[in-house]
Image 1: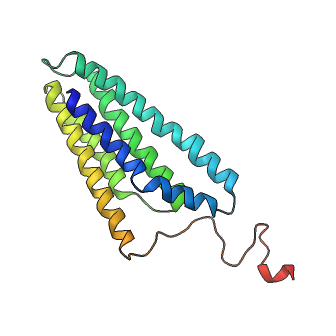
Image 2: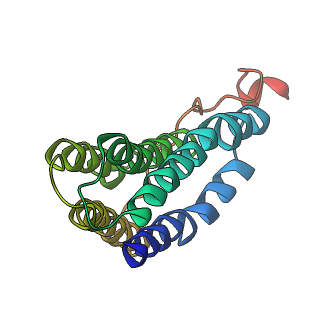
Amino acid sequence: AVALGLATTVCLWWMYFDRFAGIAEERLRGHDDVVLAAADSYSYLHLVIVAGIIVFAVGMKVAIHDVTGDLPEAARLALCGGLALYFAGNALFRLRLVGAVANAQLAGVLGMLAVFALGAGHSTVTVTALATAVVVAVCALDSIDGRAHEQGAAPPAEVDRPTGAGHNGARADEHA
Protein backbone atom coordinates (compact mmCIF):
# COMPACT_ATOMS: atom_id res chain seq x y z
CA ALA A 1 0.00 0.00 0.00
CA VAL A 2 2.93 2.34 0.69
CA ALA A 3 4.36 1.81 -2.79
CA LEU A 4 0.94 2.40 -4.36
CA GLY A 5 0.51 5.60 -2.34
CA LEU A 6 3.94 6.79 -3.42
CA ALA A 7 3.21 6.00 -7.08
CA THR A 8 -0.05 7.95 -6.81
CA THR A 9 1.71 10.91 -5.23
CA VAL A 10 4.36 10.96 -7.96
CA CYS A 11 1.65 10.93 -10.64
CA LEU A 12 -0.21 13.81 -8.97
CA TRP A 13 3.01 15.80 -8.87
CA TRP A 14 3.77 14.92 -12.50
CA MET A 15 0.34 16.05 -13.73
CA TYR A 16 0.73 19.42 -12.10
CA PHE A 17 4.40 20.24 -12.61
CA ASP A 18 5.35 18.38 -15.81
CA ARG A 19 4.04 20.95 -18.20
CA PHE A 20 1.01 22.75 -16.93
CA ALA A 21 2.52 24.90 -14.19
CA GLY A 22 4.67 26.66 -16.79
CA ILE A 23 1.73 27.10 -19.17
CA ALA A 24 -0.38 28.54 -16.35
CA GLU A 25 2.36 31.00 -15.40
CA GLU A 26 2.72 32.11 -19.02
CA ARG A 27 -1.04 32.56 -19.46
CA LEU A 28 -1.27 34.50 -16.21
CA ARG A 29 1.40 36.96 -17.34
CA GLY A 30 -0.57 37.75 -20.50
CA HIS A 31 -4.01 37.83 -18.89
CA ASP A 32 -6.12 41.00 -19.14
CA ASP A 33 -6.98 40.93 -15.42
CA VAL A 34 -3.96 39.37 -13.76
CA VAL A 35 -5.10 40.02 -10.19
CA LEU A 36 -8.52 38.41 -10.63
CA ALA A 37 -7.12 35.46 -12.58
CA ALA A 38 -4.41 34.92 -9.94
CA ALA A 39 -6.90 35.18 -7.08
CA ASP A 40 -9.27 32.71 -8.73
CA SER A 41 -6.58 30.26 -9.77
CA TYR A 42 -4.00 30.32 -7.00
CA SER A 43 -6.31 30.97 -4.06
CA TYR A 44 -9.76 29.54 -4.58
CA LEU A 45 -9.05 26.77 -7.07
CA HIS A 46 -5.81 25.70 -5.41
CA LEU A 47 -7.77 25.30 -2.20
CA VAL A 48 -9.70 22.47 -3.89
CA ILE A 49 -6.46 20.88 -5.14
CA VAL A 50 -4.77 21.07 -1.73
CA ALA A 51 -7.90 19.83 0.05
CA GLY A 52 -7.94 16.85 -2.30
CA ILE A 53 -4.33 16.02 -1.48
CA ILE A 54 -4.98 16.28 2.27
CA VAL A 55 -8.12 14.13 2.15
CA PHE A 56 -6.30 11.55 0.00
CA ALA A 57 -3.49 11.49 2.59
CA VAL A 58 -5.99 10.73 5.34
CA GLY A 59 -7.33 7.79 3.33
CA MET A 60 -3.81 6.53 2.66
CA LYS A 61 -2.93 6.77 6.36
CA VAL A 62 -5.77 4.39 7.19
CA ALA A 63 -4.91 2.14 4.23
CA ILE A 64 -1.27 1.85 5.29
CA HIS A 65 -2.22 1.21 8.92
CA ASP A 66 -4.24 -1.92 8.11
CA VAL A 67 -3.49 -3.59 4.79
CA THR A 68 -4.82 -7.02 5.72
CA GLY A 69 -8.55 -6.28 5.90
CA ASP A 70 -11.15 -4.47 3.86
CA LEU A 71 -10.75 -0.71 3.57
CA PRO A 72 -13.43 0.91 5.77
CA GLU A 73 -16.01 3.04 3.95
CA ALA A 74 -14.81 6.31 5.49
CA ALA A 75 -11.20 5.59 4.47
CA ARG A 76 -12.32 4.54 0.98
CA LEU A 77 -14.30 7.78 0.70
CA ALA A 78 -11.27 9.80 1.83
CA LEU A 79 -8.91 8.04 -0.56
CA CYS A 80 -11.20 8.16 -3.62
CA GLY A 81 -12.87 11.44 -2.74
CA GLY A 82 -9.55 13.16 -2.16
CA LEU A 83 -8.30 12.10 -5.56
CA ALA A 84 -11.59 13.14 -7.19
CA LEU A 85 -11.27 16.56 -5.51
CA TYR A 86 -7.71 16.89 -6.81
CA PHE A 87 -8.80 16.05 -10.36
CA ALA A 88 -11.79 18.42 -10.21
CA GLY A 89 -9.66 21.25 -8.82
CA ASN A 90 -7.00 20.67 -11.43
CA ALA A 91 -9.63 20.69 -14.22
CA LEU A 92 -11.13 23.94 -12.91
CA PHE A 93 -7.66 25.49 -12.58
CA ARG A 94 -6.90 24.64 -16.21
CA LEU A 95 -10.27 25.91 -17.39
CA ARG A 96 -9.83 29.23 -15.57
CA LEU A 97 -6.31 29.98 -16.77
CA VAL A 98 -6.14 28.34 -20.18
CA GLY A 99 -9.78 27.95 -21.17
CA ALA A 100 -9.27 24.28 -21.97
CA VAL A 101 -11.43 21.42 -20.76
CA ALA A 102 -9.23 18.83 -19.06
CA ASN A 103 -10.93 15.65 -20.27
CA ALA A 104 -8.41 13.32 -18.63
CA GLN A 105 -8.93 15.04 -15.26
CA LEU A 106 -12.71 14.80 -15.60
CA ALA A 107 -12.39 11.12 -16.50
CA GLY A 108 -10.32 10.76 -13.32
CA VAL A 109 -13.21 12.14 -11.25
CA LEU A 110 -15.53 9.53 -12.77
CA GLY A 111 -12.91 6.81 -12.29
CA MET A 112 -12.53 7.64 -8.59
CA LEU A 113 -16.31 7.59 -8.13
CA ALA A 114 -16.36 4.13 -9.74
CA VAL A 115 -13.55 2.86 -7.51
CA PHE A 116 -15.39 4.13 -4.44
CA ALA A 117 -18.69 2.58 -5.52
CA LEU A 118 -17.21 -0.76 -6.57
CA GLY A 119 -14.60 -0.99 -3.81
CA ALA A 120 -16.99 -1.95 -1.01
CA GLY A 121 -16.01 -5.30 0.46
CA HIS A 122 -12.63 -5.39 -1.28
CA SER A 123 -9.26 -5.49 0.41
CA THR A 124 -7.30 -2.36 1.17
CA VAL A 125 -4.62 -3.31 -1.33
CA THR A 126 -7.21 -3.91 -4.09
CA VAL A 127 -8.91 -0.55 -3.58
CA THR A 128 -5.58 1.26 -3.36
CA ALA A 129 -4.32 -0.51 -6.50
CA LEU A 130 -7.49 0.41 -8.42
CA ALA A 131 -7.21 4.04 -7.34
CA THR A 132 -3.55 4.08 -8.36
CA ALA A 133 -4.44 2.55 -11.73
CA VAL A 134 -6.93 5.36 -12.37
CA VAL A 135 -4.36 8.00 -11.41
CA VAL A 136 -1.69 6.43 -13.64
CA ALA A 137 -4.16 6.30 -16.54
CA VAL A 138 -5.10 9.97 -16.07
CA CYS A 139 -1.42 10.91 -15.85
CA ALA A 140 -0.67 9.03 -19.08
CA LEU A 141 -3.65 10.56 -20.91
CA ASP A 142 -2.68 14.00 -19.66
CA SER A 143 0.91 13.56 -20.86
CA ILE A 144 -0.23 12.27 -24.27
CA ASP A 145 -2.64 15.19 -24.65
CA GLY A 146 0.08 17.67 -23.66
CA ARG A 147 2.54 16.23 -26.15
CA ALA A 148 -0.09 16.39 -28.92
CA HIS A 149 -0.52 20.11 -28.27
CA GLU A 150 3.26 20.62 -28.32
CA GLN A 151 3.55 18.90 -31.71
CA GLY A 152 1.41 21.39 -33.57
CA ALA A 153 -2.14 20.99 -32.43
CA ALA A 154 -4.05 24.23 -32.11
CA PRO A 155 -3.68 25.89 -28.71
CA PRO A 156 -6.75 25.87 -26.48
CA ALA A 157 -9.23 28.69 -26.94
CA GLU A 158 -8.68 31.70 -24.74
CA VAL A 159 -11.37 32.99 -22.43
CA ASP A 160 -12.18 36.43 -21.00
CA ARG A 161 -10.60 38.29 -23.90
CA PRO A 162 -12.92 40.39 -26.05
CA THR A 163 -11.58 40.78 -29.59
CA GLY A 164 -10.17 44.22 -30.36
CA ALA A 165 -10.94 45.69 -26.95
CA GLY A 166 -8.59 47.21 -24.42
CA HIS A 167 -8.76 46.88 -20.64
CA ASN A 168 -11.67 49.31 -20.31
CA GLY A 169 -13.68 47.78 -23.14
CA ALA A 170 -12.77 50.50 -25.64
CA ARG A 171 -11.32 49.58 -28.97
CA ALA A 172 -7.59 50.16 -29.36
CA ASP A 173 -8.08 52.68 -32.21
CA GLU A 174 -10.42 54.83 -30.05
CA HIS A 175 -7.48 55.92 -27.86
CA ALA A 176 -5.65 57.64 -30.74
